[in-house]
Image (cartoon, rainbow, N blue to C red; front, side, top):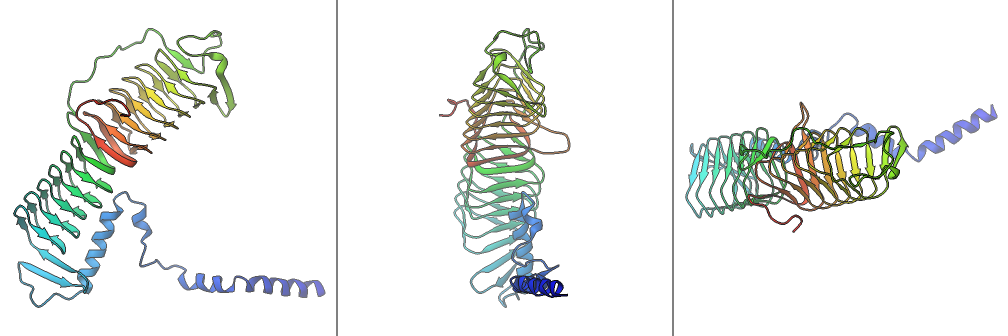
Length: 371
């Protein structure tokens, strides 16, 4: 009995340390925070979706001003106002300081300024050199040349980022994004992202390379060949291999097992990576190669012309996707992320996401790699 009494007292004292936390948990159990909807943070387009939901709540809970008309309804929230119009076309140079909701189509001329969010229920065309805070469109959206968006851009249908457009945060579409030369963003996500010239004729390459370096190599290979040294390849267990040093192969490379390269990686055109590959240094993949697994580089990464990838690309430095690159995978999106600049040349198509810690930029003409 003494032991049971001691145990009861001990557990009671132990529980007292957590009594307040337990009471707070019982209070909020089963409830959802009004400030954070976890459904949005799992979506690439959560900025646009979240603002649409908040705007609908504001308009429902805020009475219209007496000055409202059938053509223009005004909601006053104290420190800001919401203008709601059926449709509008702004002339060049127009300045708007309030939240603007257009329930039809919307167009504006060049050099306009929108200091608050713009929401369009129909199609939208923004004139050149226009400055916006953020824009969400339920139809198609065309951002004219030189437009600048300080926050995010979201569209339900096709979205065009014109030449030299700059978006300082996310660009999302539930249909497709056309990424024209000089355009910049922090990240882009859509079922299809493409740059200019997507129907250009592709490069001609050999169908069957005369020499192939295979990893893991056949047992008959004893001496180094084509930049590959079989003595540097070590089995790590679990079917994964380690190459101890730089792997610069002067022939197509065929990787049939997960591979870690303790150094830089480069290979010739028509290489095939069937499994995940990680290089501690830079990685450069030759033209017309196929990447079926993920490719990770601790440094910079370059994919040669007409290369296909079907998973994740991750570079610790800059990344460049040369013309003709395709990022495609059945049912699931692909992704390319760079800690440095992510440069995308012409005729590139990616079904998924392009993102950078610095900037994603589209180019029309080749420039020096990692300039």
